[in-house]
Length: 116
Image (cartoon, rainbow, N blue to C red; front, side, top):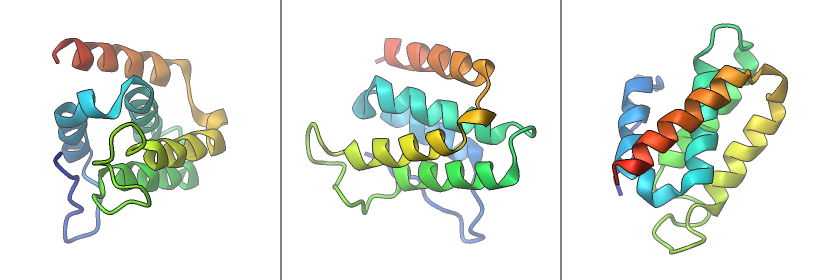
């Protein structure tokens, strides 16, 4: 599995995150993929408050970090901590998530999973 590398500047590079998602779509499962993409689109929306964007970006970076509470290489449960982190972040910003974010996430997830 590839990892999302945080640039030396410490900035979050959306282009790199989307590449990470494309490479790992089949491994993370539909639920985590859709939640991660929903968070990504909500955090990319300028209408989303800055505090909410930061919370989601943190959870998305955690998804790509290879050193987790539960290593991603463990079958079945490897991404459970990532799913929990993203789920908590999305719950915290629920008021900022628009139907367009979830619809786009679902469409992209469908496309990525059909390519596998």
